[in-house]
Image (cartoon, rainbow, N blue to C red; front, side, top):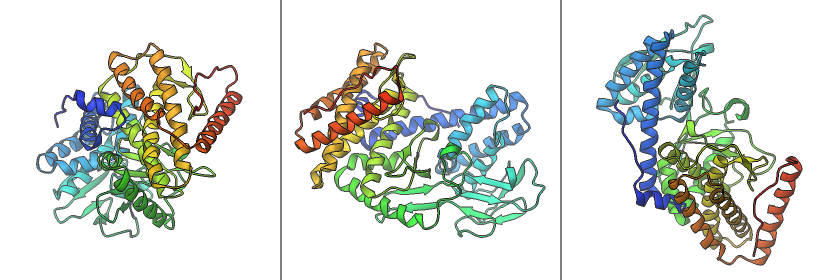
Length: 439
């Protein structure tokens, strides 16, 4: 499983800096993240062997299985190893092994990953994987509960040529739906078949535990998510095709998290590339804007794995979208995300009659523009970072000249000032350097 060296072509980087990129740019970034995942797993297997971890032999064998499957069905390996929760598990396991600590779940989980890849490829194999508490997590498939109180540290997992899997005495044929002991992941797909996303509410590394919902996404919620996804996809396909293309290339999983009293929460994470964590959306329009936001984070996270945009810095600043002071690294993430959000509402206001799209566009174009100024004035951008942020700022500067109804400007100004007042009250002693909404 040899890794590749990656670079971002100049023309692609220019499009990304302007806020877009499309399918071609997204594929460059996804390829880089795929190589990163493969290197991470190779590092994990070697660290497990070097440290004498009890799972070392199982992890080494699983790595060999993955390499063998990849020769015939690379897509099967990508489905299993590329599952976002596997990235978080691998990163945390490598970090624990490097610090001499005991990793949660352990390197033996690679056996479950390899078994899923072999199952997808229709190739028989035998691996070993941990099943803490009797639960065997199968990435991109679901969770298998093993019977009995004495489940060993590592359980044997067998994949058979006829598409069956057996583990700990339990026989499973994925795709047959839920039955005693087996909980499959749900999948949401759009009517045109162009977007298909797993809902991961089972893998122990799917997201930060403190923000996860309790248990699985309730069954009555699934139709709501499906309805919102269909509506959001239609909005993106009709009016925001660049975002639609990037979403298809970069998002494979939705992870349910706790929501606020109003609206919705969403987040992305560099070690879970491919997932959008979110609460139940209020409607399709807001889910479409969420994709616009989170795809930007996914793109920038991948860019930062290839290029260094910032020098180290420990100064914090006001971010017009956060309740807390943020370092420059956080400002880059936020400004790039709200560049995408601004672009979404800029186009969306052409297709709606109410003021909200104008308000969102006015507020976030000003906020993102102000933060690009903070970044450019910081003196901490690398040469490529200055080029990238300048590209962002040029797009936002052009948008500042576009007319917005006065009532929308007034409301955007009020919302921005309310955020600033609340930020000052919450962070006494800090001097914000953000800008205000202007006509």
